Length: 498
Image (cartoon, rainbow, N blue to C red):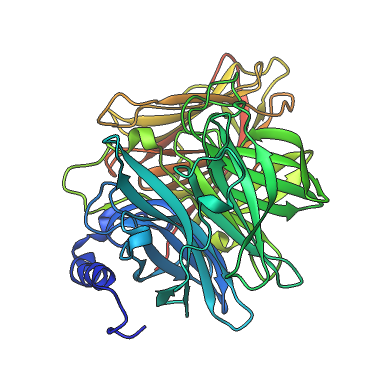
């Protein structure tokens, strides 16, 4: 895009980035997780393969570490671990998106261009004195760095919604192309019953769209309004991902507030039939997941590692807020979504330390196992027939701080607990979830990156993502078994990009 074609809003955002990104110290950034160059980051957008690289766009406010008029930030990578920041891709600079460029996605067109579809936001003060938000779907086309908005925007409006749907809740289109080259987009709306629905559109060329049907409805069963849909085939099944708002707790499966739900089933003749439903992540900070398919056929997921209820937990003076989960490879096992860190991460492992068949009772610290940037795998099993009552790993620990991961084999429950992680507010600190019973044995893989922790249980059968607030000097790791003894194998690696 020439400077003459670039809008003043976008030119200002890029100039701000160029001036101030260098002012953000590297100590404010995670080592191997994607984060914005400066300002605020939330939902991942446009996660896609394009001309030999992987692109990630994201909801972005370059000017502050708080949510405001959304832009699209932009970065790319060759291996999902090292990210190169590019200039802001979209800014709210037209009448149809003057109040924000909200979430969307991207595909590569047959002619080699990259097509972005996003939600344009326009607020209108109406005759009753109430300001209402109108949401439409818009397009931009570019070359992997610069993008021009389509002259025919918006391409989907309230006229394209099923009867009874709300024009104030119509957003987050997820694009894909089928083997014949046709384009499809799944978006969310609020249906006539007040809860979310996923609607489907199709196009021959990516520019002229028509309504195709309703993929699934919430029916007030899983939260209220749904956000950030994704719909894809995987291992012979069809998967629908949604992020519900106003979830109600259901046992240890779903928690209150903003959720992340996975439905797995079949999709035949335009009808999606769910067979299993479960949480995508059982932690405290996970939302708005989006996936892409790599050229070698892997389905990769990334999500915003944050919770809307905790965005005020910011250290004074920071210039960069928000990060993504590590990209995760997906598969299906026994009706459940399996998530494991992308295999590319293993190429950045250093300083291996291993222990085997250690008997654990009282708190144990192992030589060579400490730090805040770690890839740590722990396999635990009963040492004797009587077993143990609880096993605990403590991380990011000093005399004042620690974050705990606990396993109670009798109940088949894992608990994460960051009550002492240094959070500046009284936010949600603990969460528990069921895991598969294996006679007291469990495998835990923990990825820690300065101020985040991602837990993968039994090779990805469950995951739990959470943020930590302890100072970086809190770097001890300890192990403990209560009510008996445990046998433990440990493999620890540091992660280094340099």
